[in-house]
Image (cartoon, rainbow, N blue to C red):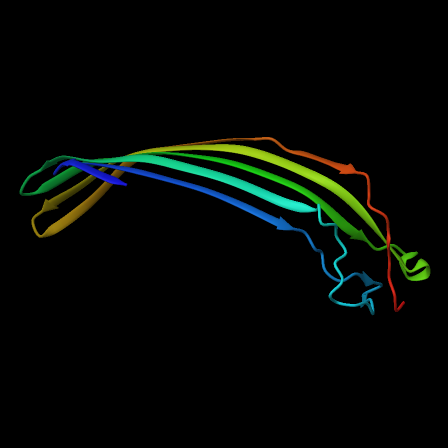
Length: 168
């Protein structure tokens, strides 16, 4: 959304919220470099195995024309952005071992990951355009500040039972 209270001032506001949910499937197991002769439509994960990502973004900005003359124009542009991100995974990985081909059982390992983060971004710029004779000079002076804080948790949970693999 853009507000333009005067010819020399505009305010910009944006926001976005997104969510992704998906189920993990790590595809067809491979033993000793060979794809197993199994039904390629088989799902080796678990229905409760999922990835979830929530993202919230917001920003507020301002463009302000300081002054304009026959040979120069000056303006200030500033923006503050915030992003909050939360990712959480619970997934089952096929675990192929040397015994997989002998036993015909595909072992699986289950784990979780939780990773929240917050990002702040601020920038302030002074923009100038100055003409000297027939040459126009565009000038930019500014400062950016970026801050991120995040956490990370990872661990293993009880593994689901192995899956019998046919065709070995």
